[in-house]
Structures are given as structure tokens and as C-alpha cells.
Length: 481
Image 1 (cartoon, rainbow, N blue to C red):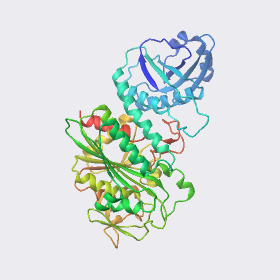
Image 2: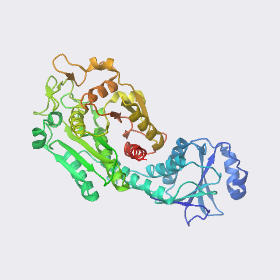
Image 3: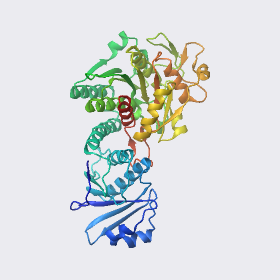
């Protein structure tokens, strides 16, 4: 979809017109400009509240008008909701070209406009690769303001670079698990490296064994696809900081021998969303030329039952010599991430940020609109929280209290991977923290936000969201300012 900004109301032929109606807006000027809208709007009593909408076919102008409740004109969260509602209606009415006409002069701050552009793109996405009859997308949108808005063309273009990566990540996470397996993920990372001129290190079984990556080897033992640890390196000519990004890449999670119930298994193709987001973020940073060195690590495996499957009661020895008792084979993500975090810490970055669909309990706690952030570095957590608020990929900070560490200690090994008796998102974060050394570390649990079972207040389509790409890019942009 192409988005452009204009300062004059000159709609293209056949373009639908979206008019945001803000709370408390004086509608008299709108009725003077479009008198045919006054009567139906008065009947519906449009007040500008989020969620309100009115479709009106203008005989005079021979086009569709959509009045959409827009809330507050300077409030970025309302811009996201406006974009969600407007795109849902445009797709419902099969409108290919649209003009969004801001009749209220504003002002509209940059964060409002950025949120609008992002969520127009995000809400135009549908995964329909396997559908014979596909819906009609919106392919062009003009934004028209009565007064100049702080949205230069360069801003739109740079956001489109990031949003293309988000769309690619959503396709990857939505793909069927028969195709999006560890082998396919290795190919995807390889294609990205070739396209961007980046260095890619690939460890498969031989290299994993040589480097004692026993978490990956154990979890992936029963799959026909070998597990893998990938390291994608972006190193610009000049940079001041080095950031390691780590993503969980369980391409399908059956639970292993602790088999999940069928209803909990059907969406487990999304368990590699963290690794996909890391790939998208590295790609976007490279495309934007951000002056920060990035090491993007993805821990890839399939967690399946079988004659070679790892078992409850096994003890795994990791490359840092810590031992972990397997209490539950469905707590596999922290095992493969432990390997990746050891490698990340050895590279001595300034910080490590890890994304994973790690615990179902974080969904119970925070739902599908907030990811859980666990971090002991106040500076790092503050930066991520700011990036979340700016991007709309919201975070909620949870503690990592040292007093809870005793819950992750095993009677027969140094640690255990499950059986924590409450606060499992926090205690999983404590487990991961054991493998990062002294490097500032942030764990982001995206189990609720990476994949939607139904639409939420700012995304109109179920399935993969691409959560994490825009969050990380926003964080990296602010880091190098």
C-alpha cells in the first residue's frame, strides 16, 4: 500500500473518502462542505467516540463517504484505533483507493501521525496465501490536512521500510509449520543476509555438538529437521554501541513428551515469532543504515515427541557448565534460548534484548496488547518502555526479584526448567538471566502479543502481528541519537 500526504482536497476518481470525526468537533463546517452527510450523521448522532462509524453513499459526488469516530486529535493511541477502524471499513466495502480528510486543523504531533501511518499499513494486511477467494486490499491512501502536518515524505518512506519487514515477518509466522521449519528458517535468514550483504553464521548439528549447545540438541532431537543456531551480523562502517538481539525459534511446539492438548497446539506454529522479529529488526536496521552494530541470534528447533525425544528427568549440561533438570518438556523455549544467550554474552555486547513467546501465564496476566518486560537495568528498561509507547508495541514491566531464585533451583541439578509454583513469567525470566553473565539483559515475553486468536482494539486481523520489529527499531533509533 502506498501512502502520500497532501494539503489540498482533490480526491482521485473512485476513491473512498474517510473523514475522522473528533470528540467535541464543531461539525457545522463539515456540513457546509458536505451537506449530504448532515442528515444521516444527525440520525446516528455521531459524537467522535472511538468505534463510531457511518457509511454514506453520496449521489452528488458518486463516491462512498465514511465518517469514523477518531477520539482525541493529538492522542497517539487514538490514531492507531482510527486507522484500525478506517481500514476495516475500507476493506469491508472493497475500496481500493482512499483519501483520509482531516477537516480539523490540528495540530497533529509526529507521534500521532507516525501511529496513523503504521497502523494503516498494519491493518491492510491479511494472510490469504491458501484461500482461493481473496479479499481486496487498499493499495493507495492519501492523507489530506487543512494545515501542514509534521509528516515529511522521508518519514513515510522510512516507516514503509520497517513496515515491509513487519509484513514479511507476519507472513513467515503465519506460514504453515510444514513449510516454516528450521530448514526454511535457515533459508530465510540466508536470503536476508545475501540481500543486505550481511554476514550469517549457521550452526547445525555438527557445530552445535562442537560448541555444547545442548539445549537446542535436546529439544530438536526428535525432529526430522536438525536444530540450528543462527547469528546474523549487521556492522556499519561507524557505530558506537553493540546490541545483541536474541529470538526464540520453535517452529512448532507440540509440547514434546509432555504433549499439549489439541486445542492448545493448533496455533503453535507461532512459537518462532521471536526469531522472526529479530530477523525483521536486523533487516530494517540495515536498510535504514542505523549506526549501531547488531548481532541477531535465532535459536531454531521443532519440539516433537518421538523415540529420540528428551524426557522429564533428564539433566542437560550447558556450555557455561550449568546443569538443568527437565521437569517438563513443554518448557523448551528457555532451553534453546539459554544456548543463544551464552553465545550472545560471549560476544560482549553493550546489552542483550531477547524476545520469545515464552509463557502462557503472561497472556493470563497481560492479555494480547501488552508484552511482559523483565529487566534489571533501569536504563535499558526505560528505553524499551519509551520505544514501546512510541511504536504502539506496548510493554508492561514485571520484576525480577532475587528472592524468587530459589524457585528455579533443582534438587538434583543447578536449575530446573519448570515446576515453579506460580509467577512463571518472572521465574522464566530469572532462569534466562542465569545465562547472560554480567551483560545488561532484557527479556520480553511476547506470548500474548505475537499472535492474535481474534482482533483487538488496534489490529483488525487475527494471526501474526509482527510484534517486536517496530519496538526494536524504535529502540535502536533512540539509542543512537
